[in-house]
Image (cartoon, rainbow, N blue to C red; front, side, top):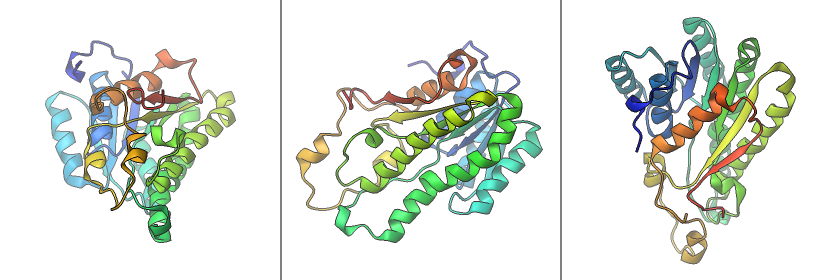
Length: 257
């Protein structure tokens, strides 16, 4: 697998890239990839130790990085994140909304507070961040890459709250792509299947599930590594993807085939 240090391209030179969920998983891999291609990284997460670890790693590679802890459940924190990012870096060219939450439940057992929390983290936080970021992205003719899920595109038993929230992300991305196309801002979503991340391996499946229904979500290929999803983010966020906007890009090992 290609490692970020082997990337010769400098597609993000002189560009400021805000990456949420950057303390681990796909977010961390994305921050490392964009930095390897010359980007100035603003890394955001609720996990401050994870952010500091990322900053140390990037510093060791000679990459510029600012870390900003934030809480996706708090509107003020979401909005302040963008203000601080622009204040400290002077501009914003790329926004990667990767922070998210996942859980599985029997639908009739879902507590509405848990449903609301899922949407607050996966959707409402993203809305607030995009609202604050779009004026800056219009100024730089930048772009947004949002993290959806392959489960947003199919029936996902036991993951209804997660899948519905990620479907909202995919739909919102298309809406923003249309609304801001005249201002030179591209907006895309990525729909990963199974990825080897902490998020994907730490949630628990409820008891008495129908294994055949769960099996429907299995990909044809082994699970992806975070770096493979980050490579897709880097392409969509780069000028090479100038003609790509409004997509919900599957990178799912054949899950939706």
